[in-house]
Length: 430
Image 1 (cartoon, rainbow, N blue to C red):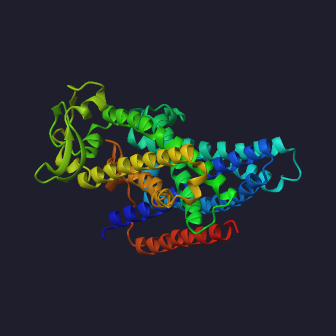
Image 2: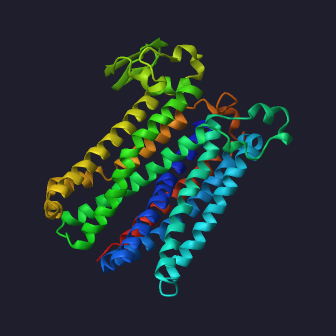
Image 3: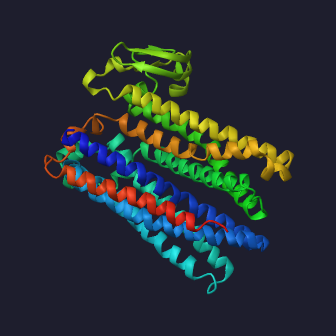
């Protein structure tokens, strides 16, 4: 394995785990604030128990996420020094403000955990709201750095006169708000369905008490609202990609030849060597309409790009299909739960078909999240900064310590994942 491939593997492995920790860190505070609000309004002790359990889970996730994020920060400097040398002053404000949001979240987690008996109930609940808002702010702000890599606004000035570069340029980017909203909503969907699956599994084992029913209701309310919203933000994201990264859109849809009335593919296995797609269902004109609002619009294909600049088309296309399929499945399962609850609410804890569907769909949010990340990052290759810096030029020239670095960070994230599972397991409701 070359040191470039080793660096890419190490970064991908680390981010794979960090995204799970980070998504839970965004979603769990929202569940906590909701449960605490319901307790404040109804004085139902079940909601108080849920809030206490979810608060401890949030604290554990915050600690795990802090270590995980610190590891990512070290890897940026160790593995990609050329990128940080060139773009550090541009993406730095995004990481700095994300750090402020992180420390704000830490302050309010402390106030929430230790202020229950020392603060007025409304003030105590507001600390939970502050934790949820800070978590979402962290997600929004850190996404600005990646959005700049996808669409490096102001890069000409950065290359010619870096001292004149406005430090807030990273936030003046049409990619950023769309990417930030879409990825943050995905965190809520993933967390909601994952938590719902945990409580559905408990019901399958005969634990259908009112507390678990309330927990399931809160989790699926958040998960379903987020899952229904994701196609809307995803459509906006695809339109931005069509304008600024047409090659990525072509890889997502395995569109090898530029054409009007471009079809939208459902499924399929691309063959880049032959420029064909096997086993796909094509909907004529739909890609043109979704990208540009017209059925007869021309969509750029990969034939307009030098072959050496193509991303891994099969990986990007299949990942995109997985992301969309997982999102649709979450919406369908969530709507089925809503229908059962509306028709026969008393049957929910005994409806084994519904409960099994919830258990099986619990990882779908994370499948969609990881697949979407693969589309975003692999679809940008071979560029670290779109059309500016190749990934091969951004990597560290020193490969002598790569094996030691890979071993260390691989062990770190495996240990964090194991610690998270063990700690959350100890927090389950008895």
